[in-house]
Image (cartoon, rainbow, N blue to C red; front, side):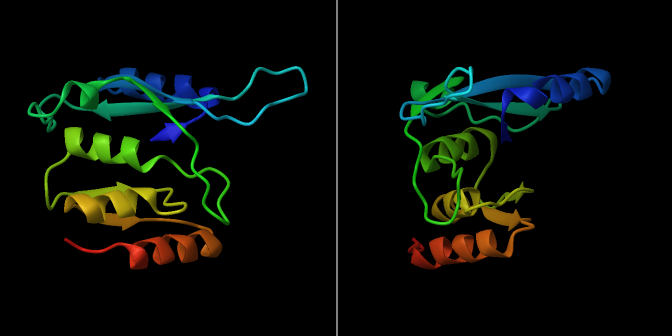
Length: 147
């Protein structure tokens, strides 16, 4: 789950109160938009993994796949303001899921998770409130070639 700094404490509190394990990762946007109004540039997004003991963890990948800190450009996808980098999502899926697992994306957006699942042989269930974003995700998935 990728989100801004304003909700980190909510998820950490939830994990602690329910005795779940948790870990934070960070996406530093190397081409973030300049910001004004007396604020620093919003160049970091956060990802929290909340899990139980015994959850799947792939120990057979490269060193880079286990990083907590990702340097990646912001993508541009027409019609969606905040698409996530495909490389980061694919890395997460490789570490925390197996082929044929079902991945739930409660905020499908432009469909990056669905595209990554398709490329990696996972099944994806996506939920999105915006009809326009659903169209974007469908178009992206139609462009992908199954292997």
